[in-house]
Length: 189
Image 1 (cartoon, rainbow, N blue to C red):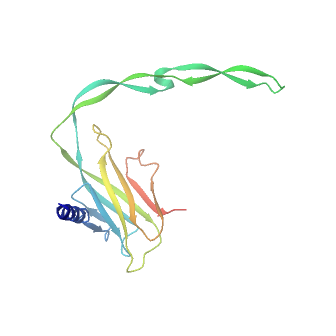
Image 2: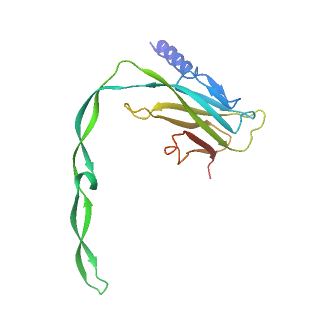
Image 3: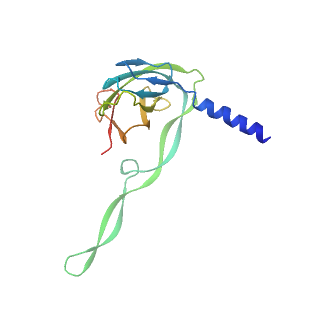
Protein backbone atom coordinates (compact mmCIF):
# COMPACT_ATOMS: atom_id res chain seq x y z
CA UNK A 1 0.00 0.00 0.00
CA UNK A 2 2.81 2.40 0.91
CA UNK A 3 4.55 1.55 -2.37
CA UNK A 4 1.42 2.43 -4.37
CA UNK A 5 1.04 5.77 -2.56
CA UNK A 6 4.70 6.57 -3.24
CA UNK A 7 4.31 5.77 -6.95
CA UNK A 8 1.12 7.87 -7.22
CA UNK A 9 2.88 10.77 -5.48
CA UNK A 10 5.82 10.57 -7.87
CA UNK A 11 3.54 10.48 -10.93
CA UNK A 12 1.59 13.51 -9.69
CA UNK A 13 4.78 15.45 -8.95
CA UNK A 14 6.16 14.71 -12.45
CA UNK A 15 2.88 15.90 -13.98
CA UNK A 16 3.13 19.15 -12.03
CA UNK A 17 6.57 19.81 -13.52
CA UNK A 18 5.52 18.75 -17.01
CA UNK A 19 4.16 22.22 -17.82
CA UNK A 20 6.09 23.62 -20.74
CA UNK A 21 8.31 26.66 -20.19
CA UNK A 22 7.97 29.25 -22.97
CA UNK A 23 11.18 31.18 -23.66
CA UNK A 24 10.57 34.83 -24.48
CA UNK A 25 12.89 35.22 -27.45
CA UNK A 26 10.79 37.51 -29.66
CA UNK A 27 8.61 40.61 -29.31
CA UNK A 28 5.31 38.79 -30.12
CA UNK A 29 4.42 35.36 -28.75
CA UNK A 30 1.18 33.42 -29.19
CA UNK A 31 0.17 30.69 -26.74
CA UNK A 32 -2.56 28.07 -27.27
CA UNK A 33 -3.76 28.09 -23.65
CA UNK A 34 -4.72 30.57 -20.93
CA UNK A 35 -1.70 30.04 -18.67
CA UNK A 36 2.00 29.30 -18.97
CA UNK A 37 5.38 29.50 -17.34
CA UNK A 38 7.52 32.01 -19.22
CA UNK A 39 11.29 32.42 -19.10
CA UNK A 40 13.20 35.67 -19.51
CA UNK A 41 16.74 35.23 -20.81
CA UNK A 42 19.54 37.54 -21.94
CA UNK A 43 17.93 37.61 -25.42
CA UNK A 44 14.43 38.64 -24.25
CA UNK A 45 13.37 42.07 -25.56
CA UNK A 46 12.40 44.69 -22.97
CA UNK A 47 8.80 44.73 -24.28
CA UNK A 48 6.98 41.46 -25.08
CA UNK A 49 3.39 40.99 -26.29
CA UNK A 50 1.86 37.64 -25.33
CA UNK A 51 -1.43 36.46 -26.87
CA UNK A 52 -3.54 33.85 -25.06
CA UNK A 53 -6.56 31.74 -25.97
CA UNK A 54 -8.92 32.43 -23.04
CA UNK A 55 -12.08 30.42 -22.24
CA UNK A 56 -15.09 32.73 -21.93
CA UNK A 57 -18.30 31.75 -20.15
CA UNK A 58 -21.70 33.31 -20.75
CA UNK A 59 -24.73 33.50 -18.52
CA UNK A 60 -28.00 32.02 -19.78
CA UNK A 61 -30.29 32.94 -16.88
CA UNK A 62 -30.12 35.74 -14.35
CA UNK A 63 -31.83 36.10 -10.98
CA UNK A 64 -32.08 38.81 -8.36
CA UNK A 65 -30.24 37.99 -5.13
CA UNK A 66 -29.96 40.04 -2.00
CA UNK A 67 -26.48 40.81 -0.70
CA UNK A 68 -25.52 42.41 2.61
CA UNK A 69 -23.78 45.69 1.87
CA UNK A 70 -22.52 48.63 3.93
CA UNK A 71 -22.99 51.65 1.71
CA UNK A 72 -24.03 55.29 1.94
CA UNK A 73 -25.33 55.12 -1.62
CA UNK A 74 -27.56 52.03 -1.24
CA UNK A 75 -28.47 52.14 2.46
CA UNK A 76 -28.18 55.77 3.56
CA UNK A 77 -26.50 57.08 6.69
CA UNK A 78 -27.25 57.09 10.38
CA UNK A 79 -26.12 59.60 12.96
CA UNK A 80 -24.04 58.12 15.76
CA UNK A 81 -23.35 60.22 18.86
CA UNK A 82 -19.70 60.76 19.80
CA UNK A 83 -18.13 62.71 22.67
CA UNK A 84 -15.86 65.54 21.47
CA UNK A 85 -13.60 67.79 23.52
CA UNK A 86 -14.61 71.44 23.27
CA UNK A 87 -11.03 72.70 23.86
CA UNK A 88 -11.81 74.35 27.23
CA UNK A 89 -11.60 71.27 29.42
CA UNK A 90 -15.17 70.27 28.78
CA UNK A 91 -16.85 68.02 26.29
CA UNK A 92 -19.92 68.00 24.13
CA UNK A 93 -21.91 65.48 22.13
CA UNK A 94 -21.53 65.60 18.37
CA UNK A 95 -22.90 63.32 15.69
CA UNK A 96 -20.92 61.41 13.07
CA UNK A 97 -22.59 60.19 9.89
CA UNK A 98 -21.90 56.49 9.37
CA UNK A 99 -22.99 54.33 6.42
CA UNK A 100 -25.76 51.84 7.14
CA UNK A 101 -25.74 48.11 6.40
CA UNK A 102 -28.69 46.71 4.49
CA UNK A 103 -29.80 44.04 2.02
CA UNK A 104 -29.26 45.21 -1.55
CA UNK A 105 -30.86 43.41 -4.52
CA UNK A 106 -28.28 42.68 -7.23
CA UNK A 107 -28.51 40.75 -10.46
CA UNK A 108 -26.51 37.50 -10.42
CA UNK A 109 -26.11 34.64 -12.85
CA UNK A 110 -28.29 31.61 -12.05
CA UNK A 111 -27.14 29.35 -14.89
CA UNK A 112 -24.02 29.44 -17.05
CA UNK A 113 -23.91 28.18 -20.60
CA UNK A 114 -22.40 24.73 -21.05
CA UNK A 115 -20.76 25.96 -24.25
CA UNK A 116 -17.39 27.62 -23.73
CA UNK A 117 -16.20 30.13 -26.31
CA UNK A 118 -12.56 31.11 -26.67
CA UNK A 119 -11.32 34.65 -27.15
CA UNK A 120 -7.85 35.98 -27.90
CA UNK A 121 -6.37 38.24 -25.25
CA UNK A 122 -3.05 40.08 -25.45
CA UNK A 123 -0.94 41.49 -22.65
CA UNK A 124 2.14 43.67 -23.01
CA UNK A 125 4.88 42.99 -20.48
CA UNK A 126 7.53 45.66 -19.94
CA UNK A 127 10.68 44.28 -18.34
CA UNK A 128 12.09 47.31 -16.54
CA UNK A 129 15.02 45.23 -15.30
CA UNK A 130 18.77 45.09 -15.83
CA UNK A 131 20.02 42.65 -18.47
CA UNK A 132 20.77 39.05 -17.56
CA UNK A 133 24.03 37.17 -17.99
CA UNK A 134 24.15 34.64 -20.84
CA UNK A 135 23.57 31.64 -18.57
CA UNK A 136 20.92 33.26 -16.33
CA UNK A 137 17.16 32.88 -16.73
CA UNK A 138 14.16 34.11 -14.77
CA UNK A 139 10.78 32.36 -14.78
CA UNK A 140 7.30 33.73 -14.23
CA UNK A 141 3.86 32.18 -13.99
CA UNK A 142 1.34 34.01 -16.16
CA UNK A 143 -2.42 33.52 -16.41
CA UNK A 144 -5.20 35.08 -18.48
CA UNK A 145 -8.80 34.84 -17.27
CA UNK A 146 -12.25 36.23 -17.84
CA UNK A 147 -12.66 39.20 -15.50
CA UNK A 148 -16.02 37.96 -14.24
CA UNK A 149 -18.21 35.08 -15.33
CA UNK A 150 -20.56 37.24 -17.40
CA UNK A 151 -18.08 39.87 -18.56
CA UNK A 152 -16.24 40.25 -21.83
CA UNK A 153 -13.01 41.66 -20.40
CA UNK A 154 -9.86 39.61 -19.89
CA UNK A 155 -7.53 40.20 -16.99
CA UNK A 156 -3.95 38.99 -16.60
CA UNK A 157 -1.78 38.06 -13.65
CA UNK A 158 1.98 37.48 -13.50
CA UNK A 159 3.87 36.04 -10.54
CA UNK A 160 7.67 35.77 -10.36
CA UNK A 161 8.70 32.13 -9.78
CA UNK A 162 12.51 32.12 -9.95
CA UNK A 163 14.30 35.43 -10.35
CA UNK A 164 17.82 36.76 -9.84
CA UNK A 165 16.58 39.76 -7.83
CA UNK A 166 13.43 40.42 -5.84
CA UNK A 167 10.82 41.79 -8.26
CA UNK A 168 7.36 43.32 -8.27
CA UNK A 169 4.66 43.34 -10.98
CA UNK A 170 2.88 46.65 -11.57
CA UNK A 171 -0.34 47.17 -13.54
CA UNK A 172 -0.50 50.28 -15.71
CA UNK A 173 -2.94 52.56 -13.90
CA UNK A 174 -4.39 53.84 -17.19
CA UNK A 175 -4.98 50.36 -18.63
CA UNK A 176 -8.70 50.34 -17.75
CA UNK A 177 -9.24 53.78 -19.31
CA UNK A 178 -7.49 52.95 -22.58
CA UNK A 179 -8.63 49.29 -22.66
CA UNK A 180 -5.04 48.04 -22.80
CA UNK A 181 -3.34 45.39 -20.74
CA UNK A 182 0.13 46.54 -19.76
CA UNK A 183 2.14 44.98 -16.94
CA UNK A 184 5.56 46.20 -15.83
CA UNK A 185 8.03 43.99 -14.00
CA UNK A 186 10.71 45.82 -12.04
CA UNK A 187 13.04 45.36 -9.10
CA UNK A 188 11.43 45.72 -5.68
CA UNK A 189 12.63 48.85 -3.91
